[in-house]
Image 1: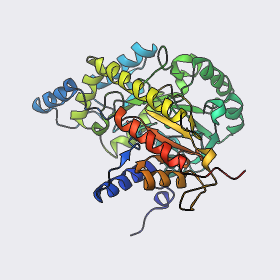
Image 2 (image 1 turned 180 degrees about the vertical axis):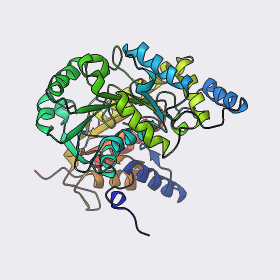
Image 3 (image 1 turned 180 degrees about the horizontal axis):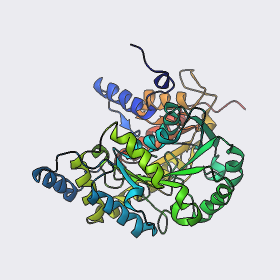
Image 4 (image 1 turned 60 degrees about the vertical axis):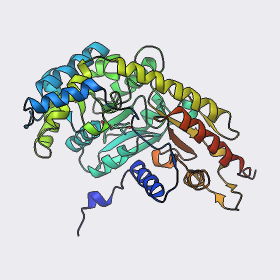
Length: 403
Ligand code: PMP
């Protein structure tokens, strides 16, 4: 079968590939401690499920407006107003099959061949491939751990060209958990104000899984002069443990939203009607679930950060949000295993953890972070504790890097 050039340019998501490998090993009867999972381990709250069942029984089982039901759009507008003081009209909001689809359609709606998208690294694995799939050119910008894994104004300035269409800002970020402060966002905005042809796509999917004081700030609210150039994306997947319901949303300039809706009307027609009813209930209903689960994630984060910090040769930066930890394993690059194999890179290191200790993690290179690996702490404290002990055992078996 002939496959199109745009498909040949991209690869399946490495996290999906890792999940597949874990399933295979489990199928062989091995007990794998799985730290690759990119979704909450909690069940969707009961009142959200009940709203979906009510929607089915009330016959809300037909196509909805392309850009989502009025009820869900009102719920999204309400949330953005309440949380950030942002005002969006109906024409500035759209709902899609997950934030992933909304981001994909935003790129599809705006990129022509050769248009550039600035992606700070470490990045969520899908951004570069989504850009490539839509004929664009990803411009990844290294943001070292010394800078908190964050884009600095200087690095932003030197990455912009006449062809730059978008800068992607994922805050709090996957895989680092790093989040931009209002002052950092303002400093980036100062650079962007000199480049009016550039728009900013903010991916705020982890914004409510937040451990620091106050709220995760949103660029659109922090810098009003930039609001009409920001496309804010978010969804219910992570906050409300609703990854399988596939509802995400975008808020931004009406011309962009109209273009996204046109693409949506000719591709999926609309997101699932039942899932939209559930998402509206999640956004407008009781929020205890969010507070309670964030408390649990915080305990897991603290446990994991401590255990990794105690492991000779490993280190990590404490995340401000999300449920991932990016662990620095550079000390072991170039080391040897007890059986004499060399650990050349982070992929070898992740394989060593899986094969010798049955701990599954994702190698950092998949996120543009060579010399690191990602742990998801969206799993039980017991499992995390056991996995960290095994990771320490795997490290203890490695020779020091030759100096
Ligand atoms: N952005 C980031 C940074 C993510 O990690 C994910 C989920 N892995 C998404 C977007 C997509 O979320 P959704 O389920 O809403 O498509």
